[in-house]
Image 1: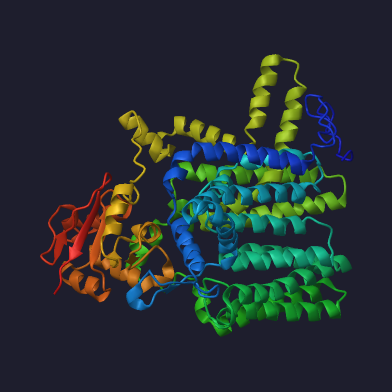
Image 2: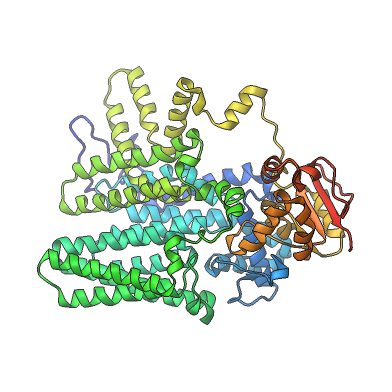
Length: 626
């Protein structure tokens, strides 16, 4: 670790692999991996304590976490590993085949099975939901350390865990109770990056390609990241024609094609290999990877000496992949949401901000999205310019290209911001180390303190908060809605059941009712599945698009057709939360609609009120028999 490049004159800092910045020896025990685990462990402990009340109440902040646990429970109850249908969603239509992966379910199921004999299933679920997300985050922290330790400044591996826990958009995906697949996406993307930063070889390519296949098995949303690293490997071979670059490219695309086929069979069985789904790994994508691999392997065997020939052959591989994909399923050219009913797009999809472009968000949120990526890009560019060797420049170029690609993607799909920020970490760390080194050279105590504080602003969360506060003071319209509301009322009123109104009393009353199918606003569907034994018409999952459209039409469509819709879905209860955002949209959309009438306590004659205990405004109505 003593080969860290010297800083510019006047900016030298002791190499932390031998001693801490204050000159106190760390000793050989404090390796980057151990430091990463200690830092992440302390942060996780704080997170668990901070969310202790939510953990006790199992207050899930995302409907996907609720549905994930419903899927896990079904698996534990005996549903086939290869059967990913949710039979309690849209039971009138035979259930809904989910587009999720068993790879995410597996550790949750294993943890519950291990703890169930000791604590019972309910407590085992609570323990696993509390501990598994931080454990996955610990794996991410180690992946960042091992992936970025080969960069030109070896000290980055020691400080990157601190930058990681100060990245809000990453941290939120590893908090207790966050059991959905987003943490897996970040972790697997970092594993691909780690292999891209290793010296080019068959092994690096094979591992990177397999991690890419796993990312796609978890979520097809990872396809742009997978294609980005494939393109980077292809570009290097096309430009230079080196044997090691050719080996990395062949290993990556070969492992991607074979790994995708293997993981699809393992997680979905033969049906998965034959299905034509655009929103998950399936036959069209498998064919595309196989076609690309065939052309690339043939090109590598021919090994043309001219860059133009290599570029043409790689272009042919891309065309072959696109042709195979669209030849099997042309609909994939339009994306997974193209077939949604316009009413579902209007009242549901456009309100799912994580799937929308950045400009659909508040300006305050845009600051937190953009600034870490920009700081990371600036640091990476400076590190690339100051690199002493070709290998260092090549590694920083990899970080720069990956960060630009992921950051550009986050402009169009907000959920990609976490991956962009994990790629921004080394650039932020490099810049922070340099700023800290410069601050320590200042002779004035006041200037040294101010400069050190400025260096701390390279930490993503601190920098974003400082920028947001500064811009908010100059432009009040940039303040977050929470800040504006707090300023107007003097204090924020916290209602833990505002989103779904499922407080313990309401849950108990619902479970006393005979098991039936419930029609709820879309956002309430998954919590009802998680907390009760009832079925629901729809949840916020797009494959159930017809039932989702029926649900929205029930609340905002022609009131004269509402009774036919609810009876057609074989629902006998209508349940909604008076304070939920989706119901507010429904009742404001149409003043004579059923949502507005029920909110006002003026139901049609075919509905009758069901008394229920609720501290937060849950309302239950029974559909009268014909």
